Image (cartoon, rainbow, N blue to C red):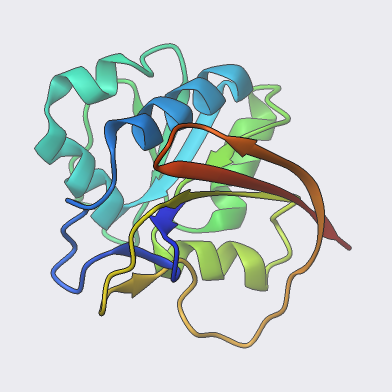
Length: 166
């Protein structure tokens, strides 16, 4: 997840103007490495606003959008699931063992509550915003983490990579 230093993935109006292109490029690399990506309906709508080029960079990745709306329209190359477990099952049925979850807040929390997160990678953008959407929606769960790696992506982005202790 790309976020401000103080843990916001977007402004209250869902604008991500404070996040640099390097964050998206890092996501593209991880998604292409894993072969699969999952995000929610609102994140999908945000991605649409970036244009077809954003989707083209991950065209060889299995992409699942989670939405409870059966009528939510998705582009070719995407699959729709109603829950985190259904999304994981669809990927497992295709022989995939690794996936990048890229939110948003509610979906991140849904995966955490169901104990479906094995690793957490945060790209911290060198900015603090006063109000916004948190990386996890306030729910009743804990993730006990062990730091695996740190990496400087650019002068504006520092990456923290954690393993979830289960």
